[in-house]
Image 1: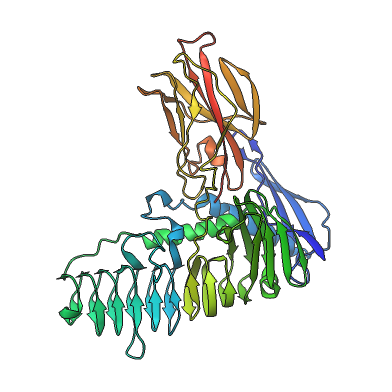
Image 2 (image 1 turned 90 degrees about the vertical axis):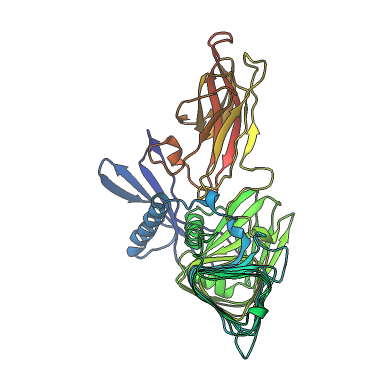
Length: 521
């Protein structure tokens, strides 16, 4: 039996002001079998305009090109995280986990099987002998079961199909043959009803052809489509999510014996990294952890093929907290049964046969496999009891007679970028600001307590408490000029508000309690 700590290229930022000057890279060395032997550590130090590299001795030999390859990959991922504009997740009509299946290109099922929840694809949808959205409680309850950015063909003379518990929103042409739609059809092209029924109405930018008696509602032609879901934006969010989790440093010790991985998880984000050999050889994954644990297994490699994996959870952990992330994969062949979310937004997935329970996010999808719903909790991570964080420390009464308190809103997702810092019960019409650091403390400070510590305290911009005595600041993680730009996924930071209180005793300032947030992709 072997024990391994999985490791991935990681960025440990050391700051001089707000300039990142150091990257620490931990890279596992390729070995035989699914478990890897050894870790190489490289330190890349930025001095002025020059880059110097020094390496500690690896635990096992490495080919000369391995360090440079690992460095290129690390820098690439860091640039992806820093350079991609965050998808405006807060503007999406529903959360990304509501898509049971999503393809960044096409979905093609030539015969048989079904998708239990709602499906979306950026391009075409082509299915036969197929059922969609059979579970009425699955999905965002928008009245739409299929969102398609291209053309859609549902059913054929040799085999029908059914879209249950909702209609369709199709950007291109829609063709229905020996099939039914339990809702409205909205399209940006023509609607062709060869045979079958539509229980709702038809509204298309083009023309309708077919028997009007097979349509339960009104038929409207020449009406431009106004999409309710930006499918390209969802695709961008899924890709960013995959890249962000791939860049998080692994933190789980696990054991491997005869095709079985065993690991003990902790509260919060747990990350393991493996290679494609592991996914081909693994037969079972045994996990123990609390209900607020989330596990991402990053599977590296361009090609993957795997069969059924037995996923066993204990200690309160749920399968909706588990995901396989394939950030590099271009092609995946899948068969058998798995109860885990599969995140592979760049890969062409051929789901040969079997059942996947969870979210299936693909670059392109085809095959005959069935997908059942169990939404993953990691797309916009906000763990139970910590949404978006947790209060700690205490505050002392100010001149209003109340103690100021932190009350942030939004999520802890760096991709969503929607966390608002809020402090309440402050004196009205006074200047204040939020600051944050990497550690906790509790020492007297003005008329209150200082609850944030660290090698440096980072100050955010000054604001006003207004007429309601509330200080609010959107924490913009994408602004390179703001102190908050230093925040990355899997990091924990501590926030507090400082404000003037001229009606209170000298030195006429006070603080709120404090708030801790562990950020996620």
